[in-house]
Length: 113
Image (cartoon, rainbow, N blue to C red; front, side, top):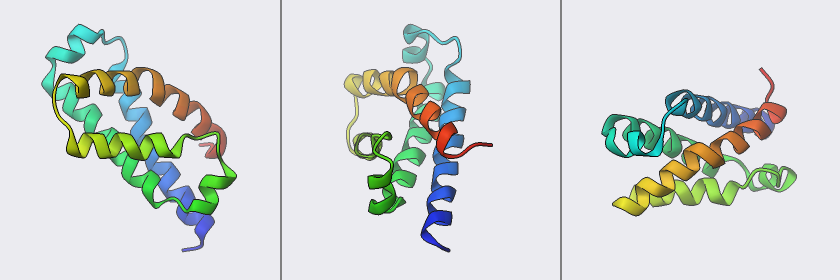
């Protein structure tokens, strides 16, 4: 698969996972999120998918699109895979409520429907 097509495939994965997170989080308050283990796990899974897809996007494509904070996406995946506890809940909340909407807005421009 050519690099551009490969990048588009991974961008699609990121965009769809971000949309899932937006749907999961619609109208949810932090105290609800904190108490709802299934919701937290669902969001964490989609953040993991985003980070994995970001890892596979070529360095050249990343360089051409610095508007996406690729490093942050990958780092969050690493945190999810290796850290646990209350800090993680706060980080996941911030990623889901602040970071993901920003990323999604950028991805809609890079990969229109």
